[in-house]
Length: 427
Ligand SMILES: [Zn+2]
Image (cartoon, rainbow, N blue to C red; front, side, top):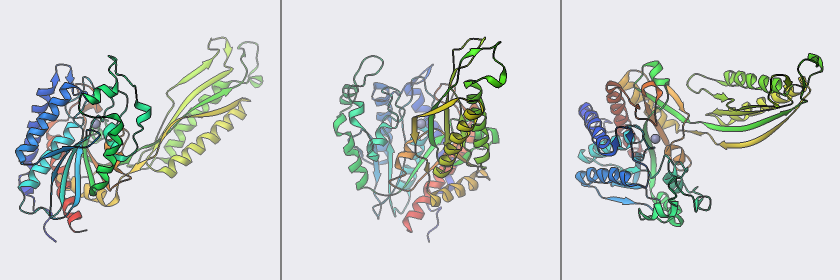
């Protein structure tokens, strides 16, 4: 087996410095004092992509665009077995300098390094997904959903942004036809994809709390979101003895507390589950009335589909128990759910090895936010790496990663790309 370090790991510190310098260059080109302004399908986003195109052509590679506007650069290898690295250059309005761009600019460096290597056993592709943020038309993971074959064109038709521009027109300005976007799926299927790797800032405070530069992302959370409506009887707060009450709020409150216990019971190190009651409505809602009705939201998330299903069932049982105890009824209505997307075990191992080799440790964490990577899970082996986010802040101009952490994490990700190329070459 050839050395996994054949792609000049010795100067990865220099590579990391170049990535950071290029990130600052792109930020300067596409930001105002309020932050990054690379809103998808708009002029600043196009400027960011032109900048990227210039960098790619300087490596000597050509670029193609699929029917959904995703940008692809290909470095063909001896085999058509393909490793894909990427993320997105679009940002929310007044966004940060690292969200998405970190993954794209580091992928650019990975391609640059591979281009300079003496051997190219497999094909390496860079992808810049179009409109990951959904900040303009409310449809997150737009380009990657089209590539994954799950874009619902009918639901998008006629949508307009804040200034009244229709989605069809915004796309057309960029040479994209909404009706043809699903063709991107056929393009993806033509690729003999063996791995998709994505590098992103954490956008939360877990790595910072451990003072770790990089972490292995186990997958993206699955989600179950419901509204629960408890109905009892409103009555006078002075005249009604406790044992005669049908207090809907107390049943709801007990259920919310029990949901937290359910999440605690199912939490394991590195694969935490979470549960949130973010909405509480009480009727009639004045101080001298026993609540006759109460509504709460229950949002449960877990990385494991079976665990999520058990958490939901336990929450339903708890709500019925507390309803009975308070002599009220309860009804559940489904709001939204997403399947968990656990990442590939072999790539998780390579990610862990890479992070440990560079940083001395390899913390593991799930991803709360969705990413383009989640869309690729049904189609190829996938893994993500996260880096430290200062104060857990993202989608704002304060978004940052201290340079010493950024440098290490970039090196760890470049090492992951090398290890993955080596793994795929020997498959
Ligand atoms: Zn992002």
